[in-house]
Image 1: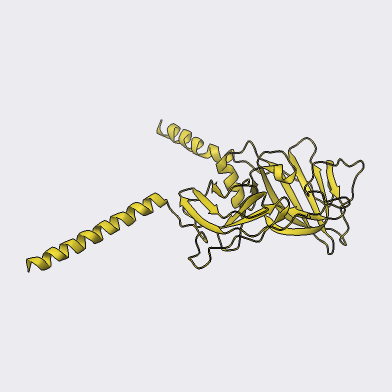
Image 2: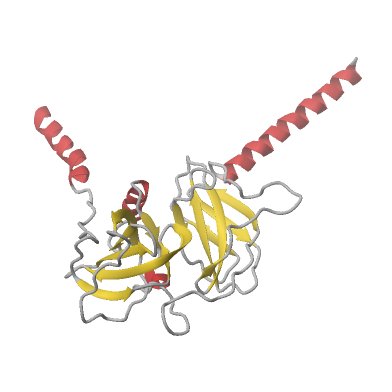
Length: 289
């Protein structure tokens, strides 16, 4: 009987591991399959998880019968292409998404900013050779939407919006698994994006579009990790430089302390209380002498 209970117990423990979610397969940009959604032979394009701008060709394919897409970018010069695998993840839990982020996937809360559905996606960038810098072959006919790059005034899609000023990151308030960021308003900004990671200037995670607000709470953080944050103002398709810290003061928000702030304040209050009692006791002792 004891052995039977032990076997049942081990089966219950092992069941979650066997049900772990695996990432789907994606075709290669070297031999793309599926329906072509959009194709540009030139222009300026964005890569998820990267605040830089890229000039070259860009084609997007939807894998047949699935919610997966591949974005194939080839630079205007050189052969170092970037393939972005887009995976719609509406059915995944927060914990499962966090596990994939730790494996190098980029969490995009809404695909609307990228011309996709207004749902959550996971994206992952991999490199491939464009073969002499030529663009990916374009099947015919090509469907003109959705677009990954906002079109300019005729011709190739370009971003001609004015570059907004970098916002000032005023504070980062950490509380367990969340962090609330407050920053200054930038003129001409239509929305803001947040980048963060486990090392300074190495931003692995991000929130693509917070809306036109000056504060935002980032969720699903590891309470035992220290995170480094930066905010970018965006004018339509044109990003600003990374946020700066207040002039003449401490670098507020350069990193967020681990742990719960309420606990920190309670411990700080207790420490000050003990210090006050020690001073009061010392004064009474002197008077007694």
